[in-house]
Image (cartoon, rainbow, N blue to C red; front, side, top):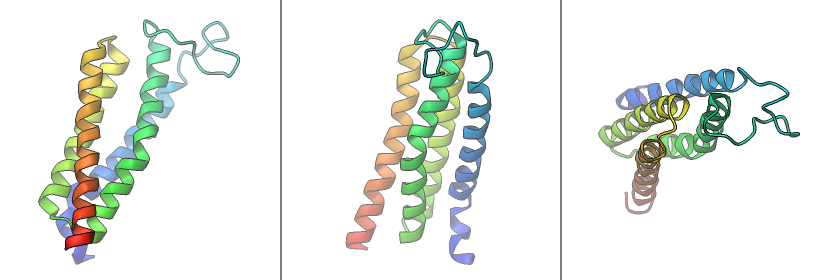
Length: 137
């Protein structure tokens, strides 16, 4: 376990991300009624409706889970510099918390997009650093 000690922030970020997804999943079901749902059971597309925004915040979190978890674990296992893995994983989680708050609490598309891009860049950089370390060392 000592080999992973340097990655404590990244590992904590993975655990925190799991909790965030669970909370968003629970929030995504609150307020659904027969009137605001499509035939598929999901809320009707309407960004002015907080029920729809909660569902989208959860769906977006789930969509980014695979890339974030995969790149973070790969970076840890291949030995990417702990400073960068910890920093990028932590920034990802913070950006996603802010995004969920903005997504659920407002209709501010530019702020939502900006926080999404920050998290996306963190995942891309982690993936590139992992790929470089795997090939070059």
